[in-house]
Length: 159
Image (cartoon, rainbow, N blue to C red; front, side, top):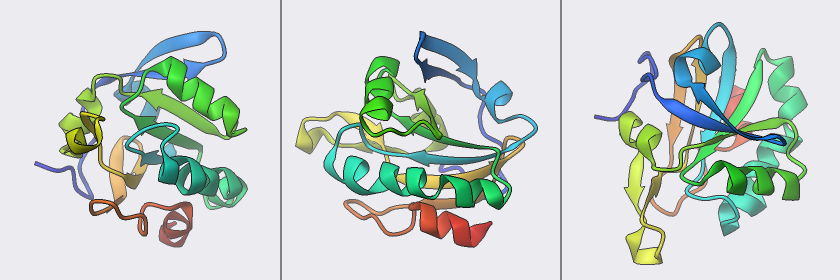
């Protein structure tokens, strides 16, 4: 079942990519007591993710925060080292990278997708959500190959 507006995020362990290396973080701790703009990409360094999705959140970071977002986070089925390298190569210091290396978070949300036809295996669907104290207040899931509703501009309109 896919997570929906009003649902609480499942308790999962993610890995926060930091300059000092991987840091384990529980989803309940990370999202507790604040508003987080979370977006997911099928993979770091992939074309749409690198050219449009991540840059949109970097460019709109101040506007998102001005509308009450405490933190902007990105998740992908990549390891923390790849997520950190992607962050650094895109000057995305405004975005916290949360590695979902085995895709467990994507699966628990019901937002996993089979990218085997592209040699990528099981990944995350492209989506965005506003998470308020661990509860989904808005969710935007893209259809296969699309990029129209999970962007930062859509999220700004929802805040």
